[in-house]
Image (cartoon, rainbow, N blue to C red):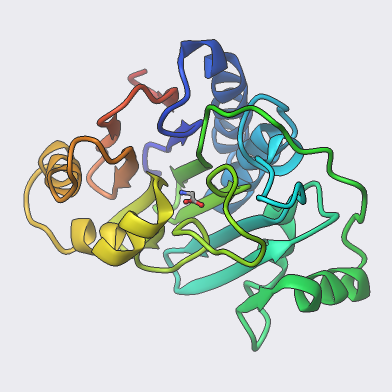
Length: 257
Ligand code: GLY
C-alpha cells in the first residue's frame, strides 16, 4: 500500500480569506483517500466543494463574462490515460462532474451548448448559476491526488478570468497547459489563461528533471513576474506542493501533513 496525498488550490490571486474552502476541500478528498478510495473520487469531491463555494472562481462563484453571463470550464484526467473536458458550459453548477462523465466516452472534449446538450442527455444537474461580480480572484480551483494504489488524478474548474468575452477558453480545461498527469506527476495550473496556454505550462513542468519544488519554480520562471500564475503538483515519489508568484490559498493532506 502506498501513502496517499492530496493537494488543492483556490486560485492564484486569491488571498488567505479564501483558505477555509480550500481546507474543507482537501479534508474531504483526504477522507476519501484514507478510506481506500480512488484519487479520481478524491479530486472530484474536492473540486465539487470548491465549485459550491461562492467566493472561489468556479461553479457557483464563477466570475462573469463581459456580457454578464457565466460560462464555466472544467477538466479531469487520470494517470491511466483518460481525459474529460468541458468548455464554456452554462447552467451547470458542477461542471467538473460533466467533465468526469467524458472520461470513458469515445469523445473527450465538449464545448458550449453542445456540452450542455450532452450533459442533459446524461442527466447532469442543470440549474441557474448566479456567478460572482467580484473583480478579484481571477482564477481557478484545482486538485491533484495519489491514492493507495499509486493511481493519480487531477481536476480543475473555473469561470475564467473576469470580464473575458463569451466563448473565450483559458488554460484550465486544456490538456498540456492547464493540467497534466502521467505515471510520475500530476499538475494543475492557475493564473492568466492566455499566458499559461502559450507557455504550455503543465507539460513543460512535467518533462523537467529535478525535485517537484525545482520543477514548479522552473514553471513560474517562464513568466513575467507581473503575470499571475501558480501550480500545484504531486509526484509518484511522494512529493506534494503548491507554488505561485501571487498569494494562492492551497492545502496539502498526507500522512506527514
Ligand atoms: N486560469 C483560468 C483562466 O484563465 O480561465
